[in-house]
Length: 452
Ligand SMILES: *Cc1c(COP(=O)(O)O)cnc(C)c1O
Image (tube, rainbow, N blue to C red; front, side):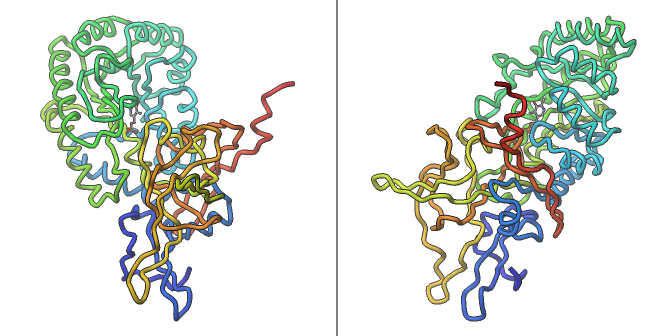
């Protein structure tokens, strides 16, 4: 793995996710052509696979930092707090890394709030609580922790929040999550901004509810929130949602409410099928769409990116167990499965899959490795257990490792134990340092709450 060459651009640049995941040339010997090895920062992925086994989630610290920095830069002209959406990747070390960078958090459950507090006990004051079904006990914990604001999603929740706050003799800061009835081009399971969705209150009913909230003794109206969906790569729905929110803020102020915060939600999509070449520019476009309608309103923005921070910062490493052919159809059976990464099965999501070692161009012909078309599937007893179908990949052998790219968000966070499969380990890389941030689960742990 030595003999790396910085000057030489790898022929696999399309599959890189800089700055975290980049191929480096590794000369096998003076005579032979180079192989290209996928690194996470300064650590070769084959080394991590050998040391920790597969399937394995690997995250890059510098990528997470760079992506958060892109948001900070794009919004620097506007008062704002980035409240990373914990549900995308809730590992404690990831949360702590973000907290150290000054990030706040968006939580959607009592469990996520506990994670945030465990990662940084001072984080509550930068934490917002979203979600359509908060329980009394979750609300009470959040009140005790002293979070920044509750994004309330119904009239009934307003009363429950007022009741819980009253019992604790506290005042809860409230934003209503309004449903702006804006269509966003994304998978139907993760679109949330239309009136047919379960989220938020209809924007034209909001003024009434704000009046009720303002009348409640233990509530303080402080903001308006929206979240129109996830994996949205076009800026215009964000702009449209913000234009509607701006009108509402003006109406609410006319009604005498103090609106200091506008929470724009998350939802900025990532490029799953190619390398992003200008993430800073992309976030800047998003920032323009979000902030232009709000100019002059004098509000503090709360941003809730999840996927766009964590997604390209992680890969799922997996090993090829078996190659097989059924009537001409080829399969690569790998040791990761839909329980480890459910996005392809759940959303039909596309993830690039690359061998962690690829041969360089042949000396004589300049050709890259031979390709073959195969389904990449896991061992689970369901036909939905696939990572790719009819995918053209460089030829690999049994025992070789593959990296499933852009799996830092909604990967491990959605992992399950289906088929009694322990969940993978997670490691966080920073330059040449490697930290296990979650041990591989054991079957004993899976059985421990069960009784016979
Ligand atoms: C899921 C969610 C987010 C994060 O969405 P991303 O698409 O990951 O950026 C933000 N806010 C709320 C309320 C959410 O439900």
